[in-house]
Structure formats: structure tokens, C-alpha cells
Length: 144
Ligand code: HEC
Image (cartoon, rainbow, N blue to C red; front, side, top):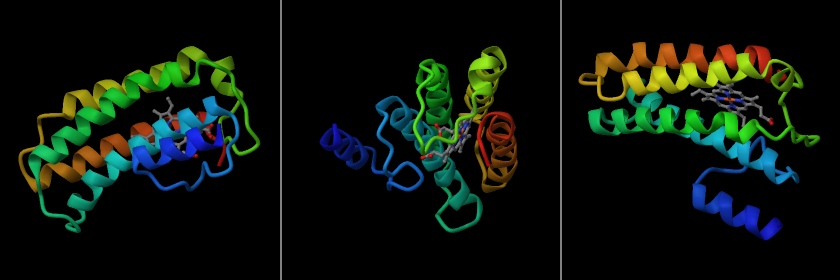
């Protein structure tokens, strides 16, 4: 299992940060899903801050990817898996409908924004809306 996790981490191109040392594979998978969301947000965020050249296609592709990844959230959390390193609150499984509604909201928001980025000035407002959507779910369902 350790080997599989190491390969998955390399394949996803994400650094092991918060999820290093996680032993439960379901917990690991949902953390990887979240990391993918963060990775795509960074694509847009670095452009918004002027740290990367503006690329409308890349920004729209990142938004589409966020929407797709958000659609996986319910299945990634379906199993009430735990791990000492997990920040998932038990409230997720007590308020499943509310939790999945947050996932759907992000999926629809990002899906609606995908394709609308035409100028650099579009990035900030999109980031703002997305950040609120991530934050709304984290506020209720992720330990701080
Ligand atoms: C439907 C609820 C929900 C939405 C929407 C959501 N998250 Fe999360 N996120 C969680 C939960 C719950 C955890 C804790 C998972 C755990 O530790 O087991 C988490 C954890 C994370 C982590 C830490 C991953 C790790 O390796 O420990 C990152 C980064 C993250 N989310 C980024 C995002 C970003 C960026 C967005 C928006 C684009 C987002 N999340 C949207 C619920 C959500």
C-alpha cells in the first residue's frame, strides 16, 4: 500500500503536505481530490496575481477541471473513513445532504465560469466566488 500511495502522489504531481503520513486509503484519496482542487485554484490565482502570464484557455480549463473534481466529492467522502490526520468533521455524515449541496454548488459555479474568462480582469471575481464556495464547506465540515 505504501508503494501505491507514493506512486499516486508522483502521478498527481502534488507535493505531500497535509496528507503525508495518512494511512487510510479512502482518506488519502479524498485529500488528493482536495489537493487537485487547490492545484487548479493556484493556476488561476497565480495569473490573477500576475505571477504567471495570462492564458484564457488555461484558466478556463482549470475551471472545468474544478467543476469535474467537485462532482467527485460526494463519492470521495461516501465512506465514513477516518485517520488521525484527517480534518474531516463527523458533521459531514450527520448532514450529508448539506455537505453534498456544497459540492454541487462548487461544481455548478465552476462549470458556469468555465469558458467565461476572456480577460485578466475576469480572474479576480472568479477567484472570489470560488474561494467563498470552498470556504463555505470548510467552515462547516473541516476542522480548523
Ligand atoms: C463539499 C465540501 C467541500 C468543498 C466544496 C471543498 N472542500 Fe476542501 N475539504 C473538505 C473537507 C471535509 C476536507 C478535510 C478532508 C480530510 O482531512 O479528511 C477538505 C480539505 C481540503 C484541503 C486539505 C487536503 C489535505 O491534503 O489534507 C485542501 C487543500 C482543500 N480542501 C482545498 C479546497 C479547495 C481549493 C476548494 C474549492 C475549490 C475546496 N477544498 C472545496 C471539504 C470541501
